[in-house]
Image (cartoon, rainbow, N blue to C red; front, side, top):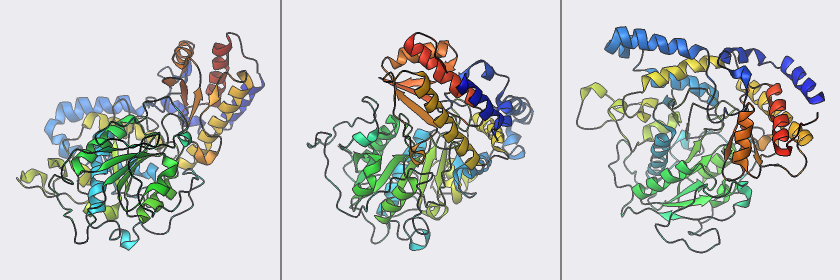
Length: 497
């Protein structure tokens, strides 16, 4: 009972406790919902706003709403709201498309930037995005990469042997593991005979451009889709994909690196990567970095502008609570926007979209990242869900996230007999996102029973239980209950504490 009493006291003193009421009324109190790292809860502002959009803006105003209801400008307006949570000044984030589509746009654009004049001309010549690299140990992983100016290594397999051109690469398909143990690397060569075979709009190769950059480095533990898309981008641009453990990227970037794709938080283990340090080292070597923020946006300070990040993408249906399939976002640093050459130029990103010109001229600013007609219903549902962040600092969210995950790990240690589960999530705050991953035999069966008993998390095959902590609505009582019921499921009895 001591841990339950402690949870009650922690909830009473929680500075974010009143935010939970904004998500109440949809059965949230009936379960311990710890899957916000997959799908966030419904905010109370969303149903009414969607009804207004459907019945009035669409139902009555119809086509007039593109102007009168602000639909046309919604991708940039909502993008600015998301950008505030990412540490991005207005005018650099556009909302639309899926994360997958935005990864493709960003990776291909990164290769084109690296080859057409490089990074030296960006941000006043700093290359690294404006100013010296900052010590990001507090919130960005604390894993300081080594200097990466050496020659890039050749294609290798995990066992150290050569990988044949065109061989598939396993991105995250094996057993879940802390990627610090994934020391091998592999590669797959794109099948395109030329480099970047499509026409370039607004980013023609500059004199002195670096066409020798032919490698895309990808976080070896990446979410599989990112790896698949990187392979497709490599085929399009004549590059090689080389998986590298995220903590080794600083020593792997070099003269051949055309782009780097990294997950800010590992989706399986919850490990937080060093965004500031990795960005600085890669940019110093002339390699643009694309950050996937799906598991960090809305959970912790990201600091895109402060850390000189050039390109980033992410989803909005996890910690941002935008709803199933809500549109993703694309961040393009302001100084990089004139050089952002999208591989998917659409009429929505045209400088004069209603001119219906046969030739493409890219829009200025964040709108350059648009493609086609915005998905208004889901975008405006996201817009309403972002009301939850009014008056909330991302620093307070991070503080509660760390307190929740600390408390949950302590409860698991107290309730579950030693040896039944193993935490894959780093104990160090500087290396932890907002989820806890526990290795557990029969994880699928265990999670199914937990859900039956009202503890909603998820699992990743073959043996990882995942518990996501969304500080806006997750209570310490939820963390204690989840650990207690987990122990009961594992032992077949009642946990004491």
